[in-house]
Image (cartoon, one colour):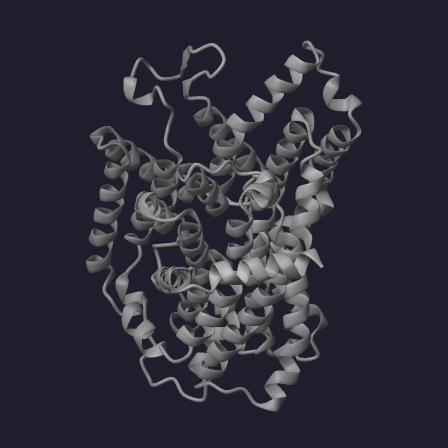
Amino acid sequence: MDILANLALGFDTAFTMTNLMYCLIGVFVGTAVGVLPGLGPIATISMLLPVTFGLEPTSALIMLAGIYYGAQYGGSTTAILVNLPGESSSVVTAIDGHQMARSGSAGRALATAALSSFFAGTVATILLALFAPPLAELALRFGPAEYFSLMVLGLVASVVLASGSLLNAVGMVLLGLLLGLVGTDVNSGAQRYTFEMPQLADGINFVIAAMGMFGIGEIIRNLEHDEGARSVLARKVSRLMLSKEDFKRIVAPVLRGTALGSALGILPGGGAMLASFAAYSIEKKVSPNAGEFGKGAIEGVAAPEAANNSGAQTSFIPMLTLGIPANPVMALMISAMIIQGIQPGPAVMTEQPALFWGLVVSMWFGNLFLVILNLPMIGLWVRMIAVPYHLLYPAILTFCAIGVFSLNNSEFDVWLLAIFGLLGYICAKLGAEPAPMLLGYIIGPMMEEYMRRALLLSRGDPMVFVERPISAAMLALALAAMAVVLLPALKKKREQAFQTE
């Protein structure tokens, strides 16, 4: 079978000392940034993109991918021990996980999170191996009209799945589309929205925007909080093994969370985060121990952790097969591929099979490394959590500034980073999630290019987007999604989906 031959190729690629080392580095760094509040995978990957210039493409992508799904593991550690989620997708884990820790069951909670995450990550890796090839074959039949409609559907999905106000999400997407227009028009050579600044002739670097919105903006927001509010459970974490009763209680929640996360992770926007919230809500309704939720229910840790980890890994499917990012981290992964001279899209699987399958197989090794890292090294993560934030944030700011300056050796980029940091802080205060803006920013120029190609081929006839069946179907889905989510009953359900109580 082709799938077995492809997995064998992936195993040969991933199971080398070099790639295993970069996989281990990636998941270790990912766990660390997940543990430390205020420094997430987006800012970290942004800072490390310049480092990947000198690496082999496969090693670079394996390391960056490890940072992303490793951060999902690390976020649960702070959620359980400190009641301060390192990642947004671990918010609901803190509800019952921290209550378990307070009652002396921190070890059980951490073991549940680690094992649930490992199972979900393994299943998601299998799904990626099974469904990516047929999806890539289908994508090879797409023309410019189909790609344009697919990107419209992606942006609409990012609005529908964004937490908070729909109006805010739409506004952030439009802001991202406008920022994507800055620079030189490919067809005419004219400069657009550069305000006669030569530094903007090549557009705004996505790394700067991502690092500013998620890194600097989060630092400013965290400085508002009192450090004394962080009370680390420094008592020794014991009993990392689960009992038979614990296993019986978590099997069904883990399976439901894995299925839900795998499906929602593919969708653009906040799929993985929505999956963890939705998984928790479902468990509260179907669990025979519903009365324990909020007081230390082990199901309340197992389901969301399985959901966010499976969602994180299935989000690679649209990025690897279609060249379309499901979230800002996948947009950074696309940037890393472009840096390495690889054009993202369905051709990657045929032109770079070792890279594609090596990355897929490395995810299984990465999940195995994470179980080994997370349980025996709890003491190290506890010490890291205890680092005073006033010592941590200057180091983060320094690394951000160095990383941005190294892109073009330009002071202007550092000032731009500061502006985006301020914008990220303002968005946080207004309750506007920055993810739709960054998706609009990365998808906007691609969408414009495919729209122009489609119109050129059709000699300016806009009906080409509705005359082609696949294109028309995706546009209809986009319209239906927006229309349905605006219905009062469903709008209320959408808002409740992101609430923990």
